[in-house]
Image (cartoon, rainbow, N blue to C red; front, side, top):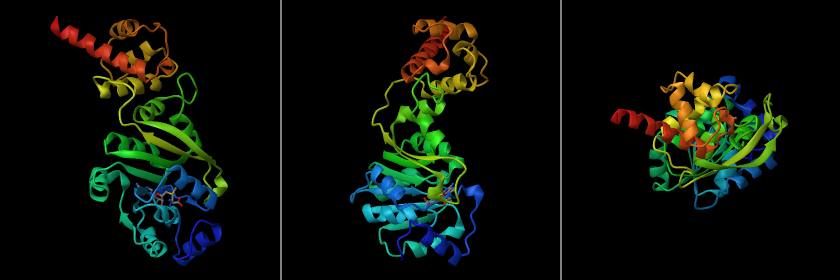
Length: 294
Ligand code: SAM
């Protein structure tokens, strides 16, 4: 089978199978060999590695991955792409195609079954409509992960690596940086895809941390605080948290906790890093525990 990765081969295979793009699946196929090389290089895939690919499309990046990895599992939701993948990947004996929705897969089972429970690498040109659920689902599953190298909307990549106080900084920055260290590998313009997406894209590698950068008693509470602060970005931290339906603290309790951790009363959430959100969550837990004892 011919090597994919250029417009001619891609169009030929799509026409042969009378394939029609489905917008609902976020289908934008890569047609630029330089970008494909960049992604597999950024992912640091080697002969020992098992790679989980999300959304292989017609198998373009899958071919690149098969040439470098020990084993590839490619999970594709669109049944119309399965016969195409069987054809384009027929020359490789180290790939399996799984027809299904990545959000419904047992990723731990995959890591155990294909990689003896060792950290896996995930590589994908992601469907943009579910970028966040896919990435957060991987992190929150607590499956052993080495790194996740993904093509995402440029704006999403900027948010993932943003620092406190910038306009891109938000709940996604904190959530990603709690689990991983982000590294921007490439910016990718729309003409590298067929059809062309309406937005710029970027390849980002998330190097998964063995240990979270902060310790917090109640991780769930910390993330509720983070979400609530950024849902009401224009408000002060105290007002934003007091008004949130997701939380159950009075304005006074929040004010006291902010003061206790040494922050100014009128601070905004966008100024806080993970360390401060963790301290705030711990202080609020302490306040509630103290009340129970009274
Ligand atoms: N990897 C291919 C490439 O780079 O040319 C295709 C990338 S395209 C942006 C996204 C792919 O993900 C499509 O093939 C789409 O059908 C698939 N997809 C969309 N939602 C999915 C899901 N929930 N689970 C698995 N695959 C999905």
